[in-house]
Image 1 (spheres, rainbow, N blue to C red):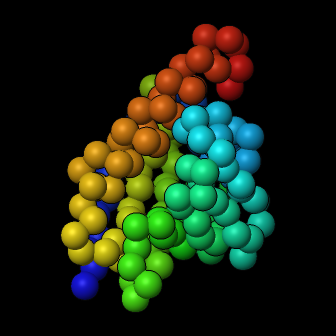
Image 2 (cartoon, rainbow, N blue to C red; image 1 turned 45 degrees about the horizontal axis):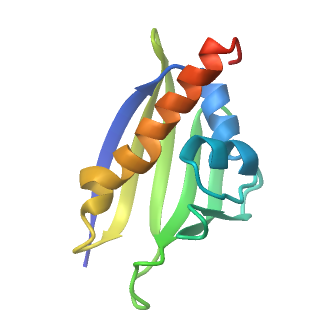
Image 3 (cartoon, rainbow, N blue to C red; image 1 turned 90 degrees about the horizontal axis):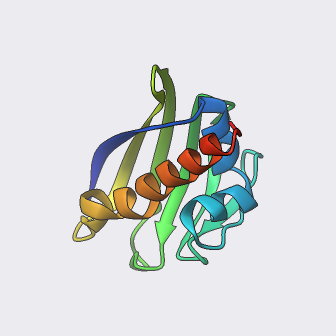
Length: 137
């Protein structure tokens, strides 16, 4: 079985800056603090967190949406890939990132409870705050 959930956060950046950073190997790694391999091509494979996360780009709308198949090394062999959709909406404080995670394996609720916040949202906020303080977008 699997389940779906949605989370969101506000980042001090433009939608375009978040989109570009998510799909850049160097910037994704700088945001999260772990090695990443990313691409701006639909169908291309990616990995994050030193290979803990792997998947493929399914749909990309620059500055607006990223859809990726997604799985971690904790997924069982019989668990299908999950799908994440990152939606970027401009707001006064920067960008509202809404993450929809579909088909997460049952028993792996840590992604929803703390994983996305602790390993993505909080480091991303710090990354973009540093960039803003340095005068970068």
